[in-house]
Image (cartoon, rainbow, N blue to C red):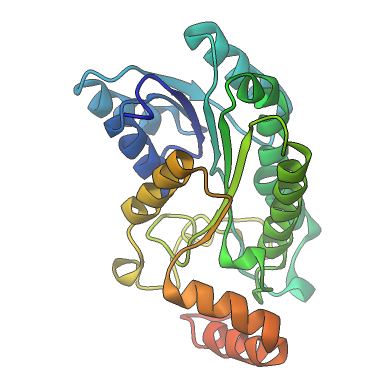
Length: 270
């Protein structure tokens, strides 16, 4: 009941964790704003949710463009009069060794993952503070340990974490809730759309997606994070183990991560 009539913006809402969040927040009674580049997919999700009677809005938005982020925030406030929650979920990945990678790949990763989070948060911040609301960043294990063949992705997630940590301290007295969540490998199309060394989608996941954590599980954690106003959450025992081992035995983690990535299908190390 704590989320009834709350206004929640979800970026990257056309698939994966973002889509799952749309359903979970709607089930909790929130008014949801779906933002992504794929308008057709967003509308399909909105049509499904609207059948349950929940109010929902669709907004086409490329978060790497500040003008589109501004339009997203302005349209939300114009429609609903407020913003209670911002879920910064939009993101892209990559898969290529840095030595082989065109720098445009890293620019695209930073523009979407980091700057997209910064743009949306900056523009929504006055409204979020007014409501003593929540801003959530969907991070990754890559936010606390370097992943080979994903230098741009790792850099963007480290930057996102630093931004959110500073933002949280700045707002200790404003009532704003700032949270970062760190899922493990999750079922989504992020690996299919991951950029190769020439900034083209690799179009095939190197992992068995059916064995990964369901996006719905992550979405439930995000909704709970908003309700409990938790600041930091590493999902799964493996994730927590990785976090602490990385702090205590970083050299061991380097070798472990290298071994795991080298065994992936069509690994860049082969």
